[in-house]
Image: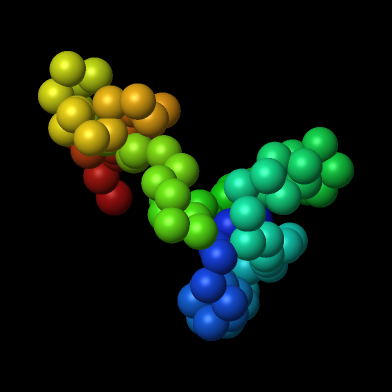
Length: 92
């Protein structure tokens, strides 16, 4: 897992929580640019990204909203769609 978090204490807490769950943190970086550089050099399965880095919104995670329903203040940001729907998940 790659952790992208600009607040050191929060990053350390996340790293501890992930370790307690028996997962490995491949790296912790404070800036999006640093994370983008690691994409080509490091191996990790998932990234935990703080959406508000250094006072700036990095992206909007708009799960079920269509582009027309995103609030105006976020319309210039990238939109991510929900990867799965709850009703498509298998039940145990």
